[in-house]
Length: 139
Ligand SMILES: [Zn+2]
Image (cartoon, rainbow, N blue to C red; front, side):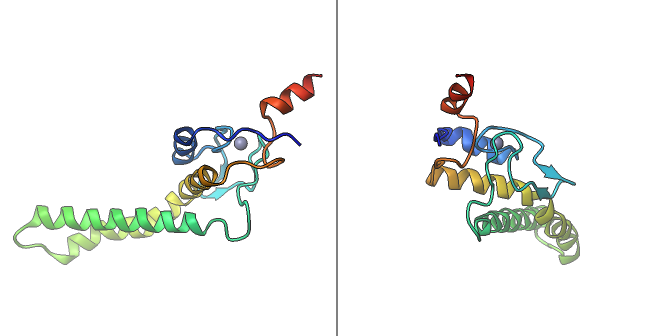
């Protein structure tokens, strides 16, 4: 089984950050925004490479959500200085804390897949459609 070449790191990260398949760049991988498909319809890459693979995506999601909550609180305190009030700060932070973990979840997954592929390149049979496989099909 031919090995499809892993794209360069900058391509992997761009595709992952824009919710595309890091291997082939295919978009539209989610159902109802939050549910990522199990495999890429174009290249057949199975997104969960091993059980527990998406723990890294949960970590990315947590870092982004907590980072944005922190930024909203810091900006709110700066804008209300010298008398910051808790209610407006919470009113700004609460929607971020409730909506963003769900909305960002598929992006965190594709981004984690890209990071993982950067550390552990594609192996034989993980994705179809590489140049060797296309050449073999044309013969
Ligand atoms: Zn793909």
